[in-house]
Image 1 (cartoon, rainbow, N blue to C red):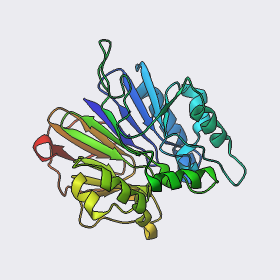
Image 2: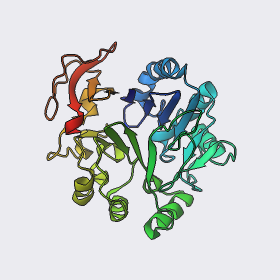
Image 3: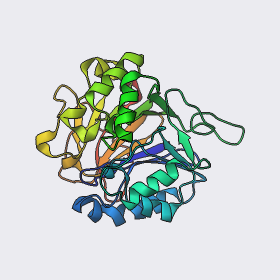
Image 4: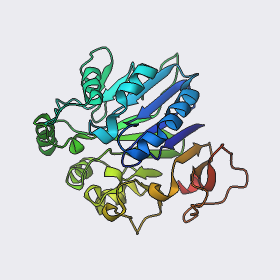
Length: 305
């Protein structure tokens, strides 16, 4: 049906969704932030060129303008020409000298013909609204509620050149019986605000906020509502990670790139590190797909999703 890819780019985030339609979505960008990202850059760009070449609708979702989420944005935009730029409404600035990538972020953020505001329950044709021409991409924004007091404080902090972590939205991708959740670098205190507003919203896969850091720990009440089958822990330094020992996890530091191949009845999971093995909470699917450079890890079936 579709593919979801989490790239291993060092201390940063970059994902894509190859929808089972003529839509393609990139979430965040990390191409030049550190040595690992630079090493991965050509691999990432080459794969993106291949995967999106036949897609008509291409969107870029920026969770927030930290350098490890926008690194290489200028290069990405020059190559792929971002026409649909999704971001929360903000006036984030930098106290230090602005990078070329942040300058490009601002240009896209402020372009009335390209930008689209992300906020709770926002809707847009083909993002989550079908038409006679094509169906919905299954992307839904669960947060922010823009008049929330703590969220307003986070916007002010970002506008003053402080951390933009807590302006991150919560984006859910629904594909048949399976679902994924991204929360950018949202820290625990803001997740508590999100928790107050979200109803039971089960997801199959949740990407742990702030690269899996303890500062982005998912509160137990919110985790109970999400009840994910799998938590993806990112590539923050190991001493900063929250390993979510009560949850089934994949740690990207060890697994490398992670690919989710979403089918009607099952979701196959692959990693790029052949030495990484983990089948907790998964089923072995003898009929799984194969992908060059990726190693099959296990599957989640819809009755367990």
